Image (cartoon, rainbow, N blue to C red; front, side):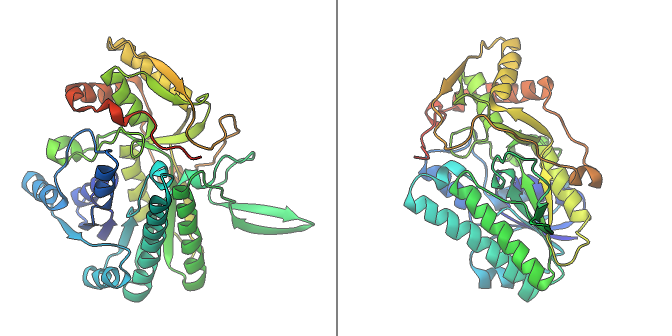
Length: 383
């Protein structure tokens, strides 16, 4: 297939581009380096520097003979994006091209505006590029489990049946984002549902939980191919952050009680899920397919205890420290989300084993001198 990866320089986008190229697809990776600029502006650079997209594409070609084309383009520019769709004629577009940080979206007005304009604007541009230039292209969009919030009922897979005053109807599952970033993703889902209902475009919206890890079949071949590995409080996900704290001798910072439960998945399973969604397009024509994308449920406290146990086994004497929760969120809550769709498509999950955590800690230990502990403690408050 011809696969267009938007946000192809990112933590998920770059491994996705390599994954599809390794399997013989024709891949074009697009990015305008927004996330790199925001990370630099907030002193939230990754653990190790990474080459720019053209250099990494050249490295893939020299190591494997596989080709990844790349393009510097702002995906909020609808005309430019439609032109790219006309030229490349993708069968699938994988849409990661968004500002990905909840804390960043809560820093202030300028960051809130950028988050809304970039994330919603890019999704609108993608939809219209498909409508105008590639009507048979399947949109695979990365959403987030954070769209649902923590309701006191089971979270269904995208849709829910409601009976009210003797009548029934099927609706998109109610959503209540915990940050402006999550709210922007809710708007994405509503846009995709609207245009799918109107025009019958093919859409898969993947509600993904937090991702951890730096390893994939392709990235492990050479240091030049590693994705960005953020461990800071703004762009780093909690498991990655805890692993770096353990290696650096910094007590693991648990926000509040640590009872917050979420669904997590290995980076390798993100690649597997996106591939399964791409190879098995939706069959219903006038509604988006929504899949909940995670493999295991953990509380933050559970994760801290797991990392401590593994770190202590490596002789690190890991500490855990509760800090005031900078976020506005329920700490004690019911959380039972369905996630059957990807398993039905063939997902074979990697579990968060002690060996996996040890591999991650040992990776960071080899680069411990690069850790900046000033990036770890929370710098952004929701209130």
